Image (cartoon, rainbow, N blue to C red; front, side, top):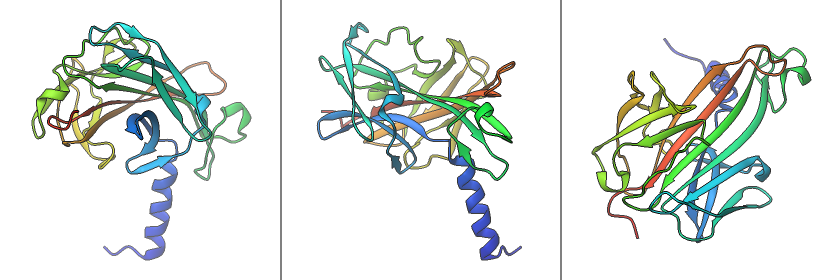
Amino acid sequence: MRISNKTAALLALLAFAEHASAHGLWTEQRRGNIEAVYGHGAEDDAFKAEKISRAWAFDAAGKSIPVTIERLADHARLKPLSAPASLAVALDNGAWSKTADGKWINQGRSQVPGAVEALHTYKYSLSILQAHAHLPDLKGLRMVIVPLADPLEVGVGKPLPVRVLIDGKPAADVKLIGDYRSAPDTISATTDAKGEAQVTVRNEGLNVIAAEANQAVKGDADIDSRGYFTSLTFIGQGHQH
């Protein structure tokens, strides 16, 4: 069956509308800084820095390191007091409502007449920066991908065992994206009843493993559900400095 150019353009537009609120969060080293990145695959978008709600940094033993959030005009930087072994960040993206024509508006249902869907989205990211890092309790991240082996030592092309937690509990049937930056719509694995899965390490450089989930909400005038995005990032074996 052939699809006309007009139909193809419409389908592309609908796909774009569906993904308008589907951005993820991760951190990268840029120009000597640890920067929070808000994007989808290769897209790297400007965002309101005040949406970064919290940041954590830990030493190799899992003890907390003070970290400040530098809020710039179009993004945010994380400034730990000393070099961390692991780092986490949270972004509160607020309420989003979808109109009948497929547009997403960054407000709750009560402020968007005729909204057909409304959710509050939260984005989280955990970064492993040093080998043998001991991870503390990550209860500040409502959804988190926890590595069950040291991701910096697994090696490219080999499986990394992970566990996905939502509100501290193992989450079954969660789809994991093995390379969010290069293939953000390609599912690599799905968690089992224990919230566990094996994800192949894709890159010698930065790896961003990601997952999303939704929780239904009852009795809220502004939202029908909460949407969670979470990522686990690390540099592949052999490219650490």
